[in-house]
Image (cartoon, rainbow, N blue to C red; front, side, top):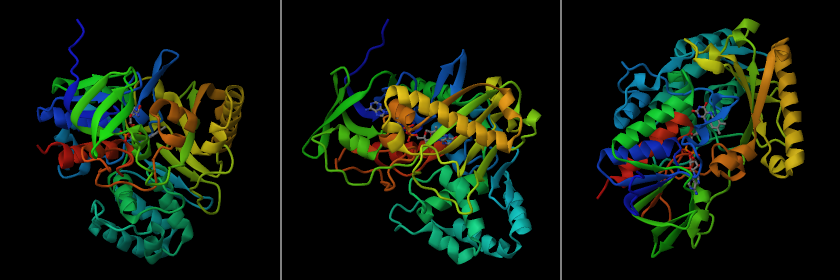
Length: 465
Ligand SMILES: Cc1cc2nc3c(=O)[nH]c(=O)nc-3n(C[C@H](O)[C@H](O)[C@H](O)COP(=O)(O)OP(=O)(O)OC[C@H]3O[C@@H](n4cnc5c(N)ncnc54)[C@H](O)[C@@H]3O)c2cc1C
């Protein structure tokens, strides 16, 4: 029997990405009548999954940041799990063994014990180790989640502590790739959040990819009474008198709620509003192309042992929208099978190569040239991989690629940008009294960041009577 669907709710959530699911769980726990509306056939948003040749593949998953053992009760991940009434075991995480930052002149290893990176900096950049120790003290003391903090250039702050441009760029490689919506520089508060979550806490990876993690979140949400509608896009948000008066679905159905939480992105949400408010921030343009190479063996059998490698071939790290389809000068290489106890299933045999991509180039292609351009870009990424790991090409059974166009098609994010607009709305407010933002454009990025965003915006704005 079909379940009864209401048309009036306490809260309507647009998007079943990680922020929407986390917010929904929180609201359902407090007895709210809440519905999550998701246009795609699967939940998970930017970190969803798809089926290929009979196997479930996680979209783009490299690692979860913020790893903390259950004994660290005050760590952000532990606090998040308590808010969601989940246990660490529910996520079935495998910690990383180690990862690396590669520059043309140096290799820095790091793992989930910060002293490893400190030792590496001491070895490769002995003159910088005191400055780095002072920077870390400064980061630990900095109130990075102050919603009223003024923008401060991270490059300018780092220049006060570190003289070597090579080391500054090395630290920026993982931090920018895993959580920066701005070209070249970033806000120091965001830098602190990322430094903490990558280096002071660390990486893990769900043993069987994102699908079981998302299933756990959806089960928690539904068992608390929340409603999830998939293949159910929001076409418009009707507004009157400074608030959202109705939510119109793609099929024309109209729902109402006291409050609406949108996880679709800031400009994307504004574009849904009727009438639409004037755009109040720049569009994000930073996007990635990633090829997943499916091998006939595990990467460690070919001598590759790191979990994540952040590489740079150029003397300086250029984090910006490239003027070519895919920028070969830097990127990330992920080997899921190298996480400590190894994931089950085919992910063990994958290698993922991720690099900056030009949205203008990819969105400008027609269907036939798009397919050919993808093949060319995958060849280019394989050639890079072959240089890094000679002989690997002979072990590639299959390959699959996403571009900014793919990200746009499945999540609706403008330009297929992963981290949204460079200007965040930290308090989640919009020009409309009962419409709030969570997720990417609120400012916390990544899997754990998105969930923290959903929970904190729910606590801040949506639980009040
Ligand atoms: C390829 C890739 C790899 C990544 N890898 C990692 C990683 O390894 N580790 C990590 O920590 N982070 C990673 N990230 C980043 C991470 O996925 C995101 O920061 C996080 O998932 C964002 O969640 P969100 O809830 O803010 O937004 P989203 O995931 O974008 O969720 C928004 C949802 O809203 C839906 N939606 C939009 N418009 C509408 C509408 N009108 N009606 C209904 N539904 C709508 C979308 O379909 C989407 O499901 C990756 C991102 C990508 C793209």
